[in-house]
Image (cartoon, rainbow, N blue to C red; front, side, top):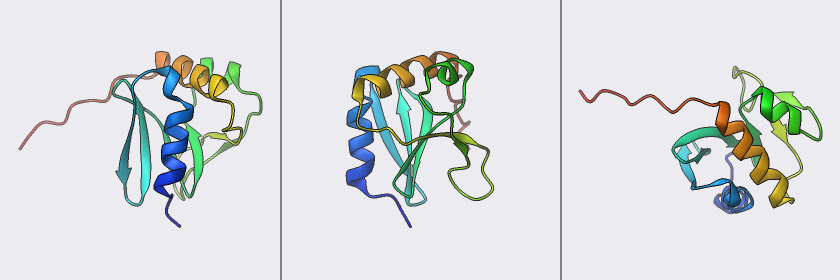
Length: 106
């Protein structure tokens, strides 16, 4: 089941205080970015954030699970209605995440 655009946009809006939040549609799901860094995924209308030590320290509930079969574990974020919490979690997590590598054009 693919994620709905409404759900993805709701997550992006909830994280908006963290910085420039953008969504990129990927295989029926969404990658979610802050300032050009991919920090999470939205799969089957569930929100996942890449695990970092700083993010782990802020989590209210630690729930590690893969966003899709065969994926590494991500933080599954069930509490999506507290925009201050989500924005701080995203902002803090992104400080530890590297910038995405630029692909060479063929």
